[in-house]
Image 1 (cartoon, rainbow, N blue to C red):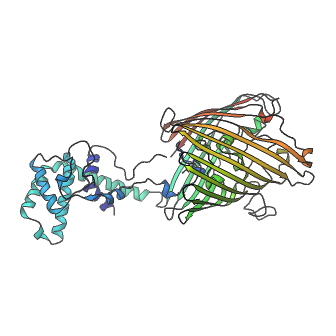
Image 2: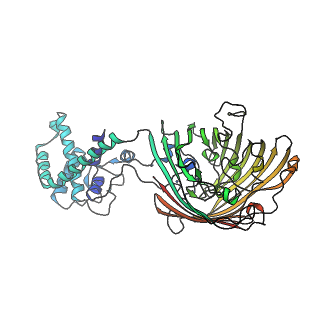
Image 3: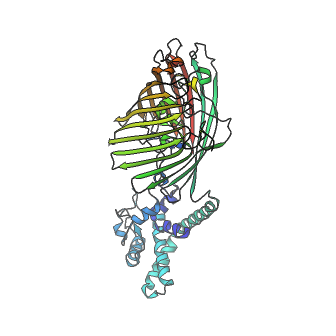
Length: 564
């Protein structure tokens, strides 16, 4: 098979002309664009390079492959039976006339449908030699097939003379093809897998509190920390349209909550495992028909695996885009996560319905067969979202989430201590959340994102029966390709989850947040190369923990992301 591949390369004057000129021939065309985790995607997400696509969603392996293999291009070629049809070849000497007669008699050169070599120069000696070699091979095939009566003696004499004239070029081309065959054979023997691809993301981050007081009104130590998060994705496809993703992760960056004493401003890329490697995500995604996709989450599942979060250029799952949990996506999405199933169904190009059920495999231990655990007898969350895309520039989503939780900080900490019910950790809460999100591309270089969420939380703990209303909102502007292609500038302002009303017996231990804290975040993701991005940014929290008695907190971050 490889001999046939390289023989086809030899038959193409264009490709061999490129080789002779010293350029690298690629089997696949390169493509731009990460999460995301893929991409993201949600699970890596790599590398989310500032596109209008939803950065967090898992995409089929077939969608992630380069789009135009050389084999397809070759199949699209049309047979050209005359050298004179190739408009960029100049018939200026005897060699051209001789080859022209051979081509027309034996049909041994293949060109492109537009009848050119798609270049700005006349045919080079190497290109000519490639065409000559094709005719020599064709004549050899005819002789080997015992059809010698079709090959004239004068044609053999012409071939011999042309071969002598272009002996040097023919030797160079054949030498290069032999070298490529040897290298390809080595790569085939050493390849990782025929069905699995390895990709990864490494984050180094400098971060520290630059100013402010914690939620108790005490000064915060001005310590700068250096942390990391490492992800390795093994993406396997068995049909070309499905995806089995196994993600390994390690990290040593903790939340700032123990210092600021509030969940507000928590960084999205925190992963405090002491750099111990573990399986962070495991899912299998496959299509059912042309419009439906099913995602089975075995570990650390999240809504963005199967439902768009409607926050392009910000939702990069920590590696790209916004720096914080709050800036990444609407906080209500964090109310469910773990093991379960997600379904996405498209109704044409405008409507998409997403449904999901995830049982908490963190503190709830959905994988343990004990009382008040498991898929259906412990903490869980269910989501339904209708996403409407009236045009390529505008998208809006309506979200409903129902959850039963005993810990509100398992997936992503946002909001005040009151809004996370930190004093009630371990006690059950039933919540109903409603959200709306939208994204509008004002111009190719300006994208407006916005979201709002409302949660009605009901305490089910003995002696603390009651309800609490929790609100949040966010507006952001993204500036793709700012200063450099692939780079992104972003600024957002919003209110992290805030308790606005409490009733029932819950009032005995929980009260309204007294004031309103604003979350203001700005970052510039500078794309150094296709695989390296440096993102400096600032997070400013006014009235931390929704209490104006606390001085504003300012957090500085420099995030460097490597993808491969």
